[in-house]
Amino acid sequence: MFGRWQKSAWLVLIGCLFSMADPVKILSQADSCYALRAEKAKGDKANRKHIDNTIRLYRSVLEDSLVSEKAALGLMRSEYFRIRFATKNDKERDKFVASAKALGDTLHSRFPNNRELTSLYATIYSMWGASIGPLKAVKQGAAARVRDLADSAKDFQILGRTHQLLPYIPLILPWPDKELALKYLLKAVHEGPKDPYSYFFLAELYFDQSEYDKAEQVIQRGLDLGVRTDYFLEDKRGRWHLKELLKKVKKKQQ
Image (cartoon, rainbow, N blue to C red; front, side, top):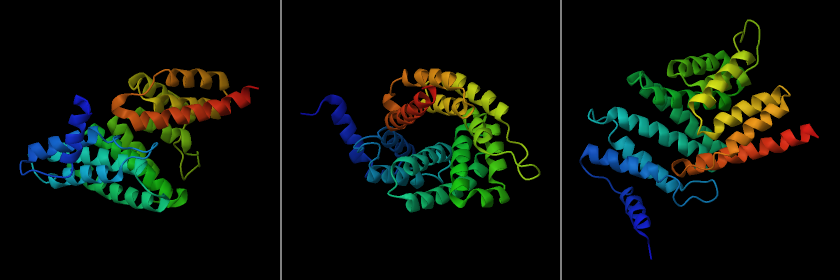
């Protein structure tokens, strides 16, 4: 027998397959579908049909002025989630990254002051840069674009990660700074204390700087968080990254 919550979740999942005429109701249905994005997942792979239907619902009301900005944000969240948790292989992932980046170009120009949408766009833009190769990405200004988007959104996690991973190259890429990476990633932990990736990125920076005791302390703080029910797949994978990094730290400490 289904419990009350299970019955409600099942009804929402069925509703994700159908749409209504009222854009406000469709948006609400899409939001409910997104909230259940981890339902029927296998391991850390989401149910592809479910997230595809969620995307379809958001797209169906994207041009309606009553809900367009909220639909745009929901659509970008869903596209990002599909890239991370519902792609079959690298080729398909790169295809979705490219299409999500093109979508982000359009939506960010329409809603430039939406900070969460800008953060998602910056993240997807960085994925796109990685997919086309570092040299081509630098030539096309992808690194600076990601930095500027993250700065405008005050997304310290992306800012820190950008400074952490990019190499300093005189004349070509003169601005990456590991001290700024540390500054931003510390801010990311302070402002996003429930996100395991804030701890993972900071711990990885400490690891790269051979500060293994600090890395271990940060990892343990991240692992102590547990898994948030509304970010089940995201946190589950974040914890996996933390545990894998802890193994590397322990080897260095021997």
